[in-house]
Length: 362
Image 1 (cartoon, rainbow, N blue to C red):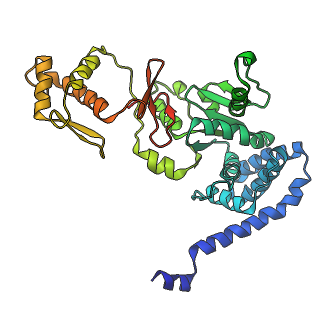
Image 2: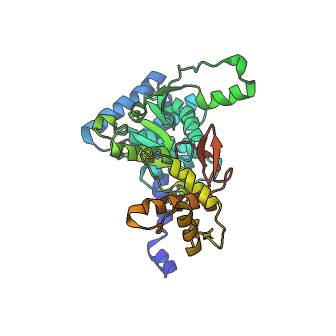
Image 3: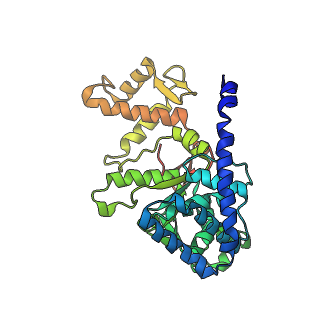
């Protein structure tokens, strides 16, 4: 049936690619005119585009010119010219579609096209990537293009916000840092000036991870007043590694909680009690679901250790929550596999990337 429909109406993918290819030819036709502009004239193009958008409110009419300007800025700052296939990818991202590109085909460079075009609205754009390192790296790398066009670039990290600033140099104790470490450090940190998170979110383009953006969103919804919020209204975002972020990591919920108000003594007590329980006798483990459940014998052992009659009694229901937490910690999470202990703090290990995730809690 699908073959018959394709014969009658044509392949929709081929039609879409043909339409995108026509737009690419229009962008290529603008290249010669943009190439003769001085650096200052190229930069003022951003002001011109924003003014034209403010007048008619139509962004699509500016996209081809915007892409041509970004391509020229990339040639001058990075020595890299967007290929036609990258222009097609940028157009797809601008339209809210998924662009699949192989490793090495320049996804990072491709994203600059749609980011710049949509940032012309003045409402901010987000680039969602998989870890803090890539957020810093891409902001410094692609920030050169945006800076040349008069746009600001922010980065959201666990420790706070950063702004791309080509004049910023981080002061280091050179004698105490090995040369290899210094070189690696400069690639990640040079030109990123620390700033409040709110300031990083007011940048035209903000790089960060899904976890950082997600937790800031949760914290803003718990803020006592608007002044305490750091994010502005959400507008446009590009998701890097969309399958990892929206499928794999989407299985891990973002949970935010207040500090414990009660003593930690009960946690220690239940950890000791659960350590004496026997698997398949006092509790059972479902490794696939990562769940552990107490048996009748296990419940009795806990009740005897606590000196209570019913672990699930209404006035003692808190004991059941402590017991479940302690059992999960023992049965489902292994040290140096699911978490590490660093400077007396439990730090979760991302099961997909094996990277540490400071600030996250089970």
